[in-house]
Image 1 (tube, helix red, strand yellow):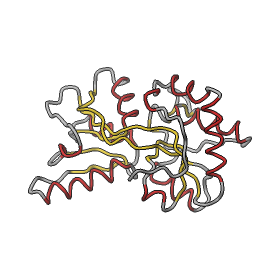
Image 2 (cartoon, helix red, strand yellow; image 1 turned 45 degrees about the vertical axis):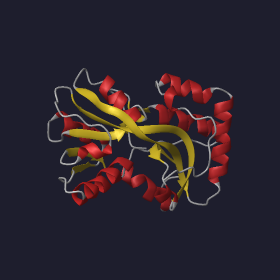
Image 3 (tube, one colour; image 1 turned 30 degrees about the horizontal axis):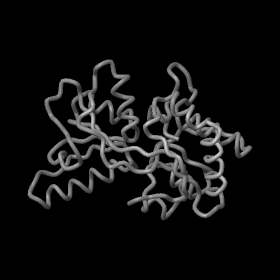
Image 4 (spheres, helix red, strand yellow; image 1 turned 90 degrees about the horizontal axis):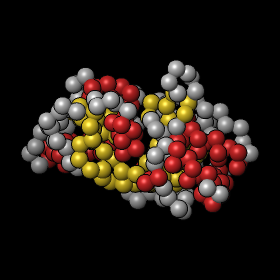
Length: 237
C-alpha cells in the first residue's frame, strides 16, 4: 500500500505504523483468510508490477477497478467512490467536472486513474482548440498536495475520500472545488488467475455479513462509499 493516501492508508502521526481504512480492512481480511498480514509501504505505481512479479500477494491501496488494470491483475470490489478536485482555500479558480481543467496546472499521483484521466482530457482539450492540461505527476499524494499548497499547481485531482479527508485535516488550507464525479468500484488487487480472488470475495462477504466492514467504514467516515455485494473484476470502464 501507498501510505500517503489518507484516510485509505497513512502513517500514524509520530510513528511508523500504517493506519487507515485499507489497513484495517487488510487486517480483517487476514483474520478471515487465516493469513499473516505484512504491510509494505511502497509507491502506488509499483504495486501492480509487484503483484505481477510475485513481490506482493495483495494490493489494497484505493485502486479503481478498471478494465485496463483487469488485464494484468484480478480485483475484488470493496468500495464505490468518485473523483474530486481541491484547491487552496484562497484560490479564485473553480473546477467542476473533468472538462473544466483545460489550461490548468493539475497535480496527480503517478499510476492513478486521475493521472490517466487528466492526460486523456488534455488531448481532448487541444483537439477542441482549448489549452492543454499541464499535468504535474508526483510519486506520492503527499507531494501532489504540496504542489497545490505551494501554488505550483492550480488544482489537485484525486479520489473523493482522500480529497475530503485532506481538506478536513488541512486547517483551512484547502477546499473542495466542485462536486465529485465519475464514481467507480474500488478493488483489492490480486495476482491474475492465482485463485485468490474467489477466496478474497468470500472473505469480504463474511466481513459485510458480520458487521466488521460497516464498523471500519464508520471509523473512517466513509459509509457513503459502502457496497453490499463484492464482485470479482467489476470494472465498468
